[in-house]
Length: 101
Image (cartoon, rainbow, N blue to C red; front, side, top):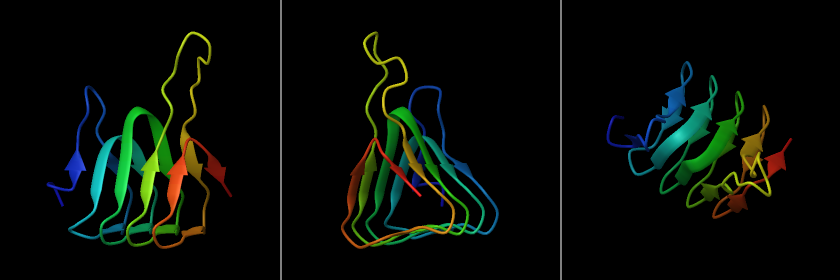
């Protein structure tokens, strides 16, 4: 699993209990994967300039790309990406700086 989890600057992904990450998925930076979540083939989750949270028992399916918007003087919080508990993100979905409940 170490090759799939990559640090960025001072941030490194945090993985909860019994999380499934496919060997072809890439997870970078400030990303939190909560318990029993799953990340399927060819998913890219890039928390390089803001935080991404994947809720408990949620799954991100094949080929999806998740990213964020950076913090700035005009937008101090930027746009993190937050996926709630028990959410399915379908195949080839692109999510950028949003909340999905």
